[in-house]
Length: 277
Ligand SMILES: [Fe+2]
Ligand SMILES: [Fe+2]
Image 1: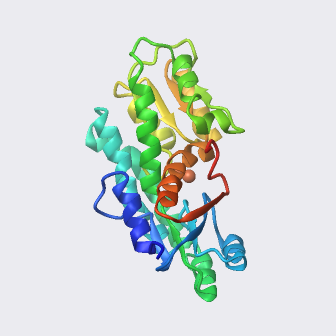
Image 2 (image 1 turned 60 degrees about the vertical axis):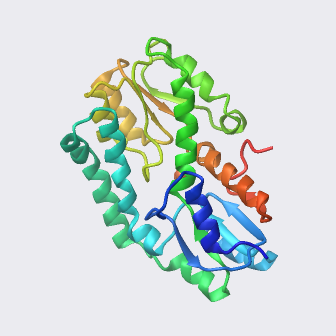
C-alpha cells in the first residue's frame, strides 16, 4: 500500500516540525495509494497529461498553480515580516516593507485562472498536489547553516564560495550572483530571506539594510530591484542571489529522498533532482 496525498502533505510538514499545512500548499486531486510520483518544480497542465499517459500515481509540484494555494498564498507572506523582525526590523517598518508584495500577490491571485491546471487533473482523475513552503524551509535552514559558519568580519566572497559547495549549487547551470555589493566586503549581519512565499524585492532589502543587516540572501530578484538597491547603497551593502531553481531543488531533493524511503518511486523533472545523486 502506497502513501495517500494527505500522508505526503503531513510528511512535508513533519520534516520541518510544522503542525499546520501552509496556505501555499494544497491537494487539487486526492490519491490514496501513491507508489509512483512525477515530482517537479513547475508541473502544470501538460505535465499532468504526461503523468496520466505514463501512469504515475501522483503529480507533485512545488509551485502552486491554483485553488486555495494561490488564493490563500498571502498567508505565507507573514513569514516576510517574521524574518525581518527576527533581524531587528521594527514590526511596523517590516509590515510596511511587505505591503507591496502582499498587494501584488493578492491582485495576481484574484485575476488568475485559479481553476486551469487543477481542472485538467480533475478531468483526468489524476492525483495532483503542490508542496511549497515546507521544502523551501528545508533549503533556508541549510543556507542558514552555511551562514552560521562565518563571522561578521569574514568576506562576502567566501560566503558565496561556501554556498557554492552545496550539491545543488555545485551542479546548477546558474551561478550564485552578488547582485549588490562587493566580494571583498565584510559579511556583517546576514539575513537569509527565503521560504517566505517569494523574494522580498527592493522594499524588504531596504528594511534590512536600514536596520543593521549588511548582507541579504534572496534566491531570485528582479533587475529593477537590483538597480534601485545599487543606486541607493552603492556597494556598501550586499545582496547575494543564489538562483531560483537550484535553491528550490535543495528542499525538494530532501522530500524526494524521504518519499523514496517510504516506497514512493519518484521521477524528478522540471529542476528537481539538480545536485541529487
Ligand atoms: Fe521554492
Ligand atoms: Fe520557487
